[in-house]
Length: 165
Image (cartoon, rainbow, N blue to C red; front, side, top):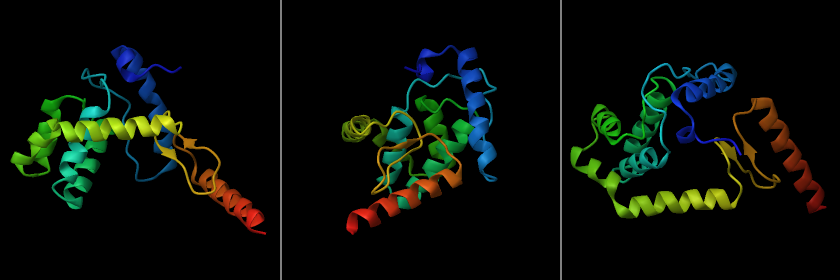
């Protein structure tokens, strides 16, 4: 079993983030930075998920802004988005309603995040991204070349065509 970022020392985590360069090379617009700060490593993904869900309660546009900002803060700026102080800074940067920031600690949001995490584990998600498409056996875990996804979709469609006969 691969250690989680929390189980890694900061030097080990920095080495682990070198893997981010593979997906960065696949997509022209992707911007990844090998972890270069002394902040972190992040403890777990629950706080940023709570922040994204709290933003979603303010509307889809707020969610999109916060989601994008969380990804950029983590993968490009190497910020520890598991720290509530950092989440608060990002929230204010996105000019989201200050009063809504308290929703991050809402028990309902926490239960929702945990439930979704448990559901993901039940279907075999062990990393991100994870893709499961109709007709496709199993999951695709981790960033893959676009050509790989195309082959999987075509294979699943031809498998469905055979079953429909």
